[in-house]
Image (cartoon, rainbow, N blue to C red):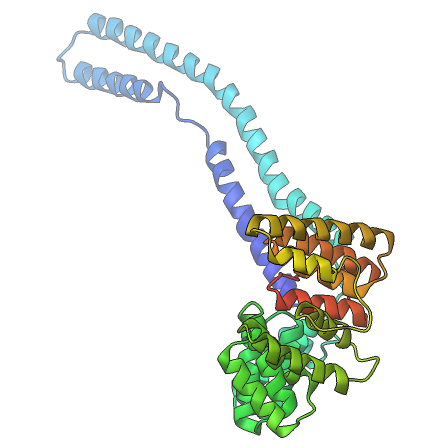
Length: 378
C-alpha cells in the first residue's frame, strides 16, 4: 500500500509541474486596445457633464461626441479580430491539461503492469538478511551486521575471515583473522590463514610479521603444510636457497602423494636446483646451466627467452602438464612479462579448471607472484 501511495504522490507532483506552464498559456491575453476603449468612454462621460454645465455648446458637443464614438467603434472592431485567435489557444491548452492529468498516468500505469512486478511482495533488508537464500553477499552483510552489534564475538570473526579471503577482500580478511586470534586464541588454521592473507596483501612477499605467525602455527602443529610452505618460500625470497631447498624437500617427503600442493612445492625444488620426480618440459640441462655461468646478463636473458619459447611450444602440443604451466608462468614473471604470465595462466586454466586441484595450484602460484587473478576463471 505504501508503494502505491508513493506512486500517486510522485504522479501528482509531476503532473503539477507540467500543468503550471499550460495554465499560464491558457490565460486569455489582454487586448491591446482595452485601455483606449476606457479612455474614450471617459471622454463621452466628460462631454456629457460639460454640456450639462454649459461649458460647451450643443453643436460642438455633438461633433466631439461623434469623433469619440468613431474612435470607440474602431477600437472595438480591433478587439473583435484578436478575440477569435485567443479561443483556439485556450482550447489547445485545455486538451494538453487533460492529456497530462489523464493520459500520462494511465500510460505509465499500463507500462508498469506490463513490465513490472506489482504482485511481488516487499522484501525489506531485514527480511532478506533473515532468509539469504544462499546469496553470499547477503550472508556477509548479515554477519557484518551481527559483528557491528557484538564486535567481541570471536566465532563470528573466525567464520567471516576465510569468506572474506575467498571473495578477494584481503584487507578485511587480515583484520578478521587478527580479531579471531585475539578473541579465541591462536590455532594453526587461524594463524596459517592470517599469514596467508598477509602474504597476498603484500603481493606474494612473506613478511616478517607473516613469518612470526607461521612459526607460531608450526609450534602448535609441526606438520602444518601451509606454514611449512610459506616459511620455505620466505627463505627463498631472502636468498637463503640452501635452507629453502631443505625446507621444501622436507615438505615433499612428509606430504601425501596426492597432496594438491605437491606439484607447486616440486616446482620450487626444481628452481632451487633440487631433483624432482618428473621434470617439466623445457627445463635446462646440466650443460645449459654450465654454459649460462659464462654468459653475459644479456646473453643469459636471451637463453632464458629461448627456453621459454621452447616450453610454450611443448605445452601447446601437450597442455596436460601442470608443472610446465607453473614454470612458464614463473618464467614470464622473471622476464618481467606479467601480461604474458597472465595469458599463460588463462591458457593453463583451460586444461586445469580453476575449481580443480591443478587450477587452484596455478591460482595460488599467480597470487604468490603478485599476478592479479580477479575474474580469471578460465
